[in-house]
Image (cartoon, rainbow, N blue to C red; front, side, top):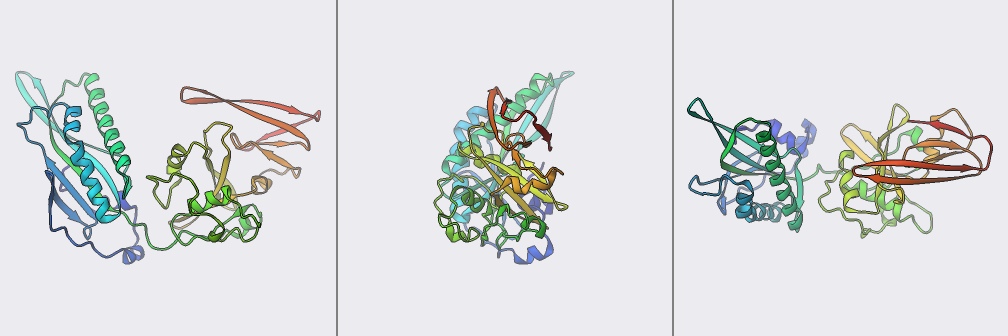
Length: 367
């Protein structure tokens, strides 16, 4: 991938698809920097009204350490991280990816052949001010992944060897979520279930408000839809979390908060669907969220009553009890239900011990 090859696809990689209406609402262009170089990095390209900024560092061929990726990273890590910190100070919130252009060579029939490969990150990182520790962590992870790719390539017997690290890139995009909140009213049939608390937030952080509704129910029990009913300092670590937050990124707040286990339901064709079931230990309380969508806008709500939400998923009208780790439905008036989670490496086994006082138990697997 050449450094100068940028088009609207690059903008979409950082910001996602942008409609004409949304494009008119986007922020004004940034003022170009007076200083176009920073500690051996040169600002080689700005695009899309200065939103996308490509920093490039040419590596000297005279440097004896350019063949060893780990030595190169150790010598230059501070240059990478300082540059990203500088951009966060200027832009407040940015999306960043690191890249390395590496030259390879191979001996064939008495001649030396050369090739270049561009190593880049598949996922972009969102950094804000004072995220120094996270920036360092993500740079180290990029170096480890790149090293692993090179080693895997060599182990397969390709014969290509690293000749030198030629160029380093830091791609920076100014990140500012589209203006306007993510609040959406509940669909009529979903609202009738009386199972959802839908906080009427005016920002893009509906995930925060849905979690707060679960963790801090109003003491007077009144007006749970009002943001003013919940504390802003909720004790949850949101470092590095992108807002609005897609379902595939729910792993991040779970990983940063050991006491969070989040299930996500959805609403489609007037029925409940399942987006995500947490794989955390059984002793971690499950927080059930509902994700409703309208066009490109998405909004999280808190599912206060799962039994009410899923009541009409089966034709049986008896009281239903659900296991939040496997979504099995159990019918019985009096029951005891225990779930023991046993972890083995990266997989877990659910051992379900059931003891029911009635002689007959009907069990239905919903999903």
